[in-house]
Length: 116
Image 1 (cartoon, helix red, strand yellow):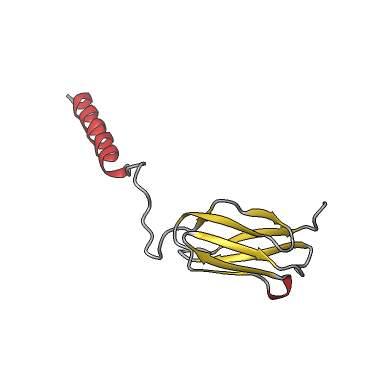
Image 2 (cartoon, one colour):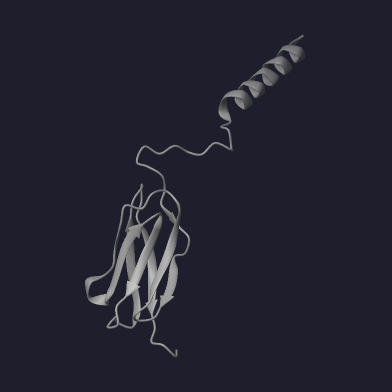
């Protein structure tokens, strides 16, 4: 009789752990601060005088900022981040910050001269 009650106790405990301790793996975690901001590409190349778009794949971008001395401009429009390089854009790597959601995203922008 002792073995039967121990078996039932073990099985009951095991069933309780399974029923109450497992979260639904298909449900997305909820975050009170908004959706996580995800962008299509974290690194782009651009030539002076050109413009490129990076799609926001998840979350909502509220604004975008390029370094002031870089010669780049960035803005959010229609679910995309539009990055423009002026004719005087500085060659090299610059970081454009996209704000929105729980955490900001960064796009590395490599400005290259034509012919490189």
